[in-house]
Image (cartoon, rainbow, N blue to C red; front, side, top):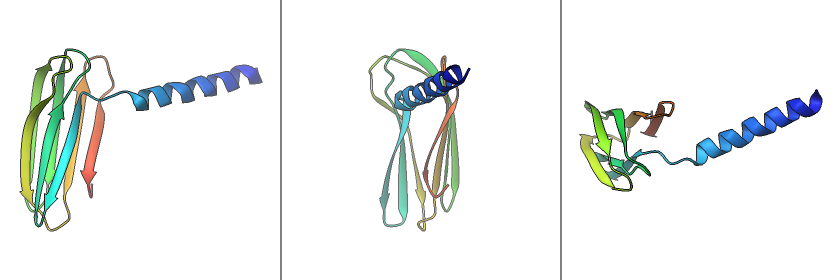
Length: 111
């Protein structure tokens, strides 16, 4: 019984490590210059798929971009660019739904 429990814990740990190593189809690139923040939503999927996303960027103002797009395998693209004025306190939050995966969230800044 104890061996089975240990095996289950090790299997769960290994699966979590594999999932953490998986690449996401969408990601955020952020650059800051003086009082301006630029957030690029980048796509690069290892396989063709449709993804849905919501990108919220807040600084001195707020912007939200929602989309659904079909991605081609191994074809990098910039899906959107959002710029906002910032006094150093900004947040970029991306929520993504990929085919066959649990939704995931990526954040940058002081979220």
